[in-house]
Image (cartoon, rainbow, N blue to C red; front, side, top):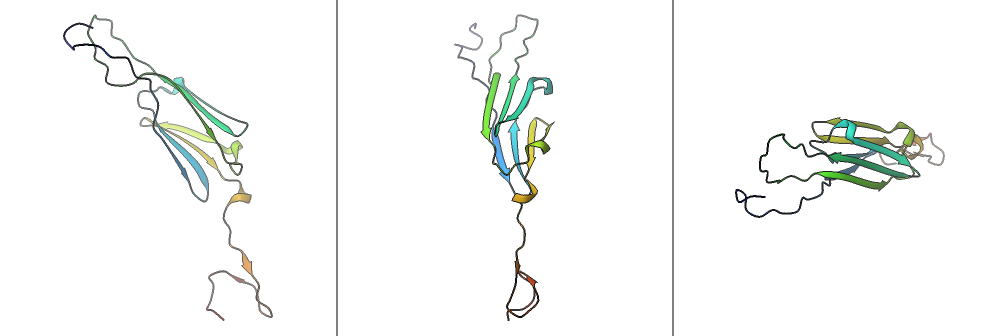
Amino acid sequence: MGAAFGGSTAVRGFRPAIDVRSDESAIRFELDVPGVRLADLNIVLAGGVLTIEGERRFRASESREQVLLGRAYGRFSQALVVPEWADADQLTAKLEDGVLTIEIPKRESARLRKVEVLAAGSAAKQLGEGEDE
């Protein structure tokens, strides 16, 4: 690199930031992937492991310009263990505004449910119904 920017440094590899969220209905993975094209993403769920791969490409210009890179580029791969209660057949993924969101619903059998409590000599009640007896 010429004197315009001083010395050069090594290019950093790109590694997306990721949030994992879980509630009573699903688990969600949200990755910041600005500048990553849909065609450069690959998502595989096999053997209980979710693998997310992609590449953020550097687009060089045709001119002989000098460039000081402040952003990271390159291939990335992230492997995450998916809980057994996740319904892998219902996995969805979308890319919107530079955020990749992967959602896997919980199996119906793993969702929270109210438990019916029977009192001796009375009709069944749902938890939280009525007054204390």
